[in-house]
Length: 275
Image 1 (cartoon, one colour):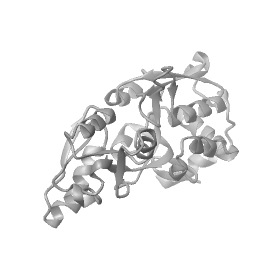
Image 2 (cartoon, rainbow, N blue to C red):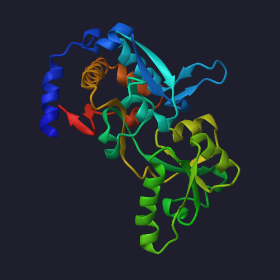
Image 3 (cartoon, one colour):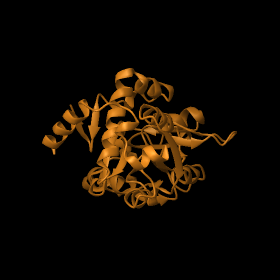
Image 4 (tube, helix red, strand yellow):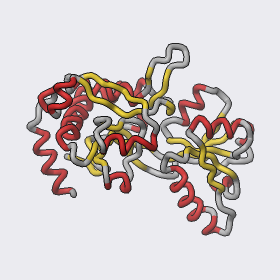
């Protein structure tokens, strides 16, 4: 794998950023069709006042498309339908806060663009009761069932609760992150889980409503997903990512959304550095 990535880097070094690096189907259409579910602020969401699509993923996606001389057709697709949509050609790629996980690499290649992790949080009224992660042992914790959070939380619980003789966390799968927050506010769950990049946003949006519990308990990359066969498009996006990192635009967009801590130090493909 490392040898292949080194070879890929050598090819990309000689690749000019622009429409000529894109597959013919995209050059002809003049757009790239991108799967996105706008319900995960600050990554992607719709402004409630204007219904305008916005967020960190949106800004990065537009910056990359500009480098490639094309436009973006954001297609609202349910998270569980994203992988089949890209593998069957309904969309060109996935850019929607998706974690670059080993099991997903069986069907996708990822161009990573930020660091992330699963983060426990609760309502501020319970901050003195739920201070540390192990205070959640035996408690009900809500999280989107469409994500990797349920499996990751169960593994964390086995190692940090059951292995120490404490009761397991009760994982409650929800319809999405918004549903998890609703259940948390209603007291139907004791805590919730979201990506570490979104919890600070929530705390700023609803001041004094939430508190984070401990630190992120997983460490993953988030990536733009491409069908395995679509290497030409993947390589074009790697070249575009290199360009916005070199120009400083990448850091500017991170700063706009207060995500500087999530920055990558270079190009990563399928969670491996490309030098």
